[in-house]
Length: 623
Image (cartoon, rainbow, N blue to C red; front, side, top):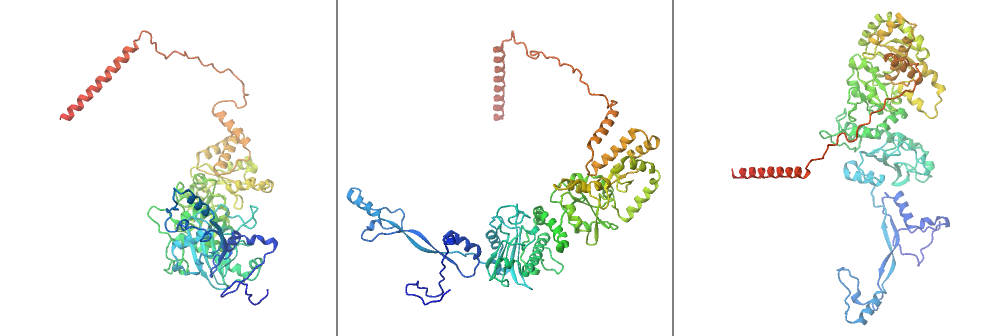
């Protein structure tokens, strides 16, 4: 640049400095007023000093006074005033019209204040009301819905910055999608805007300021410690951004906790948000109103579950935010959910495990035979009905010292006292059922890896469980549904990992035992044994591997119960013909009937009834 003395022809600045930019040929778009306004509003919207954009506007101009009659002066005070022209004087009217046509427009320079919005995050949280927070949210999110919660804080330490974070009222449609990943727009902005000294640096990051499971959060971050005189690419590789990222995640989780507690006091007797300089929304709960965190969970529960899987450093904090359906809740009420902390409070004295069962839906899980004994003994079972739930639990081997126990696995145990009682009861039946167990293992072959007496059944004859390290029924269905899964890689494990458990006190098991002892070579005994296994596969949530064999066995049993030979070929035979009904059978014979007389008689009866009713009304009025 050059510095020179101000020329006499230059604009009189009075004070300050004039910076003149000369645009290259390929940069003509920056001379376009709408483009300039867009850039200023995006990057300099919160600059502390005012920014004005000068533009030309067309306004009405007056001709010279000698050519412009006073009667055509601009109507400033009264819009209803009209031009006074003598109607009888045609020459005067024509002259006035000719002079009025000389009115012209001219271009005038005007200045528009661009950065009207004030940086709300620079204020103290105690000085900002709820309306201001909501209005600021509308500015940065372009949404007219009020946010569910917000957090306004100042962070200090390695780096100092201010920030306002918002939780939207609903989960965005593009949740968990990276900018430009699923569209042609590679510069799609994130929901977090990074400012340096109130100047927007970027809202598109190579590595986001928030992890993917928190991508629904909207907000701003402003720091005076970040360098602004380097490229945005170099800034994003700064280690200071990692510090900001960790603190933002921590504050976001605290904001979720504030929604969960809804104004409850922490251990120090201070409000959880105010204790750390936050201003978080804590709506009051009215009678009959759904708790705010229930609404939050319905919208963002999937995000919290994804965080448990992805964010190992904050896994225990996220675990406190999890919610589940259980045998203690009403499965028909979607708002009736429980936390892991509430589950621990309801555990039995000798209970060491947190029991859970995954399945396709709540109805199937709640009626599964796998949880019969647990429900009877008063144990609570978590219902995992979402496909991601089982992945979440595998990332949480324990919670507050209590381990998780999959009810559908072979290693499921009751409490110490109950487990001891059930084992003692089965010890007496083991010797008796040894022939049946051996028979089932031989006949079922590779379908099962083990047959044993169960300690988990009450009213069902048998169930099928998986090995401790095998796939559960729900996980097996998910694995089979994967687009790029090779069945050969896990086919052997799926076939071998089934364990058949028998209820030694069920009548069907006792009857099958009697048939095995009396006539083990009878084909019908083998058919019944396979059907018993098939029924256990279905009720336990697994898929039948060979539906054609199952259909053949069902046909054999149905034919035997109906005393029909299942091998008789299907033959065509004559069906009985239906008798034709007489078309006029129900039509009455009207010959010899005087229709006019019948109609007149009916009319006379109606008139008589009307007259009697009128007389009765008259008598009532007299009384």
